[in-house]
Image (tube, rainbow, N blue to C red; front, side, top):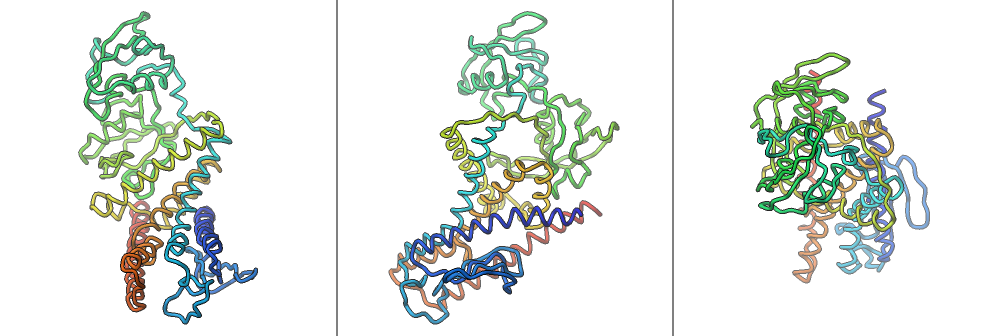
Length: 442
């Protein structure tokens, strides 16, 4: 049953993305006056379909993608030169047709996020709406009564009342490194005024206001990561790290990021029992594109949803899509620069497993996961690699600069090189994915 759920969830996610991707090519071709002969979900022999007009809408035997076949799109086949043939259209139209597929994937991501924000609301961690009670300090900050210490409740920043963590962060974020700010805290039953200077560090806000109380309950343990290999599981509660009690999730991230790759000693509460588990962090890229040590876990959040109006939902969906695009771009850049390993990439194996996990969390999480994968698919297809959509755009750009078509022989070699490269690359990624599964279970 587990395998069936994985296949169904993965098929649903990948199927929706492929359908939208190919529909982008299809509708752009139609708008540009190109005849579409085949619209196929999957490759290989046709197993079912229906013909409407000039187009055969089909499902093919190998459900690992899809394609749109247009009249006159193969330079090695005989052409009539009719205006409805792909290669008869101007280069700028052919470029639009090539880009339309990835564009639909990006649009799908934006549309999903917009729908979530407008119909359900912008997700926010519940602690942000709670009083700013300091639970712990960063590992590199020593407790000093002249500054914020655990147990303080921050009630004002620069004379502005801050009843919640969200309001504290909003006020502190207005200051730049080197600025001084005034905090009012409740300590031992009375108010205490403190003066803090914003440090020149990446965790400047944490150093000033400390950490909130955040239970370290695991929501996700990423496939093939040090955490999964060590035996950490969803719903585990981390009660101690390297002998120190954990009262805030941020203490866990401190210990992992400061580990330098050395083994981190966890104490995990599972089914009422405390279990010691050792995890050796691995290098990874954080949300800012910086390399850091990580173990591959996510915290279970208690989310609230603040419904947005139409315009705010549009804006926030655009901001979130751009931020995710930037993050994917940093990963791709890290892959080419050597900062990111091919072992960190996911094939359809991991995508299917993660899709099944997302489905277990409910429709909302599955939608969010679909948005992430759709954006990845769209951006990867824009890479200037032969056979990908970006490779077609590159070829059109070269022809445009030369003001003539490249030879058929060159185009054949161009596509062959891209096909061999991609098949080898995908085989390597899938091999690493399967190897991760065996490393975890054996």
